[in-house]
Length: 164
Image (tube, rainbow, N blue to C red):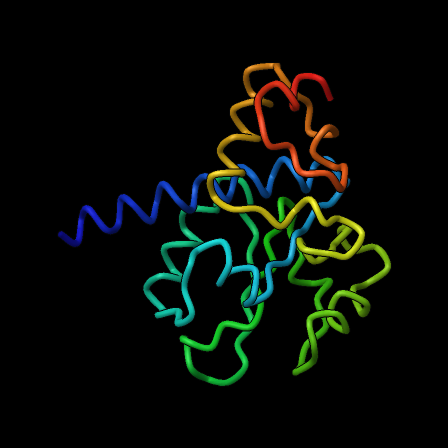
């Protein structure tokens, strides 16, 4: 049963990793930040055990080899944010306790371009796992481009996606 659960989580994490990578690329980001509410929505969880966070980081490493996590307290179940980068960024992150927005704002000027994944300027990022898979399938088959998903309207069908 444990192996089945791990493989199910791995598949879910890989879909998320690929989706995040495509949308980071479209936005010109080197680092995407997932806050707790993003993780809750994407993974369908309210509590995060340290083992699940470890699995998530391991499974996202092919897309984001540089990762830094922050917790609200010392408890591994209180994940606050996860910085996922394609380039090294540890030296650019400000030390100490602060909000995610403040940490992003305090990045060193030469640091990688970083933003929270869900942002008011990018409402198209708030999707279900089914939507992620659908968008990735349309993009990888050449029937849609990532830019087509940047609109505020929700693409609800195959025909709508190829019409643009």
